[in-house]
Length: 115
Image (tube, rainbow, N blue to C red; front, top):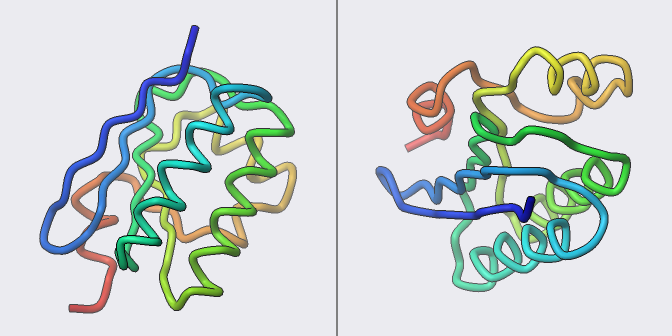
């Protein structure tokens, strides 16, 4: 199942909704390209809505860390929201929960950015 990526803007925040698997190959490449394009457009506030993300592998985790780092380097910020139980556990086990700003809902994530 391919990763479906949709994005929209809410109060100056780019919200990227992910639907499917974040795994090595086309999926991680598509996600990387989408977020890098947003950063290139000058979007500094990005939320990844993980509500419909079904699975993630080590390549997917590496992609998220890389995007987080790229955003920071360019003066931006990448946040995650709507983590399912499995995603939360994976991020906790890998200690990545301490790296990412995580919100329970998309609205909370959007509000977490300074105005």
